[in-house]
Image 1 (tube, rainbow, N blue to C red):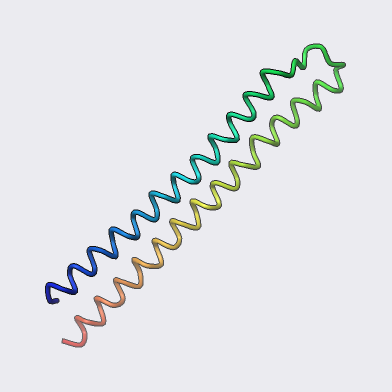
Image 2: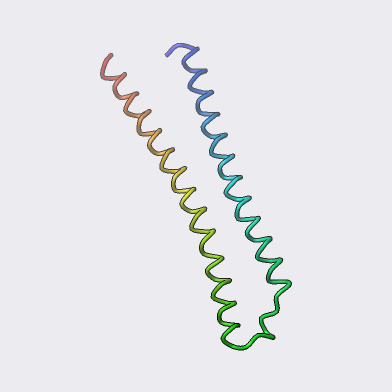
Length: 102
């Protein structure tokens, strides 16, 4: 490879990992916003003063509201990792093809 191609490849790597870092920051901020809202709501609601059925309802809503955002973030992380894996496999195939051509 010539020097220009190496620099282009390095810039592509930096862009890709910067994208992953930014995506991770977005996913984490989504969880942080969810946590702050959940904490605020939990602070202002007192389920001990509710009838037992409403206490169970309150608890079930807290659990479901904890699972749903986590599933969303896990799906986004899976997507990012899968994209990274596909790009790496493509690069490996390209390198093998270059070796076979020589």
